[in-house]
Image 1 (tube, one colour):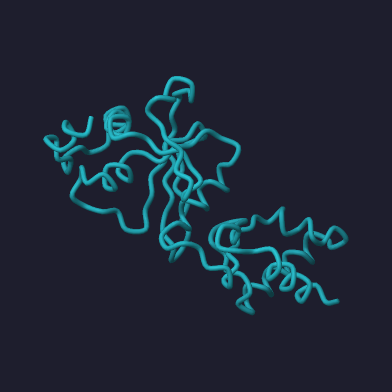
Image 2: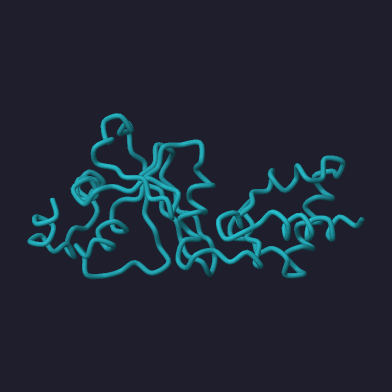
Length: 182
């Protein structure tokens, strides 16, 4: 069977609304006998034919397995930084809680034990990782696990604390509402 057909068949059988993002190494393991160059050519062909969409460097989206609306960036963040401690915080949490008036469109912010970095995901948006030295054990009472996103989520009080610690603008915060939620 041709490699592109095998890839298409495998994705059709294994991808779904929760498993639709694939990293380069995961897909490469399907073709252990292909050289790196040949595999990159296969991925390029899969993107050209519309089988996969390149979200960012090394991360691909299988189009036929549609994710839940608005969760692609969260799922991508969980995959990209799977080896570090991350949690949704800052403007994303405050916007979701209604504490800031502006809603970030196609932009999510996470605190991460990894380095600070912004990942452009093309038309899907931007993932902003902001470095923190905080330990999970110190934050356990201020975090909840968000199953739909596949990430930890900060409480409003922790998000406000993170805003101050990272010296981000607090001009849009409705402090009366924030005080009610804390």
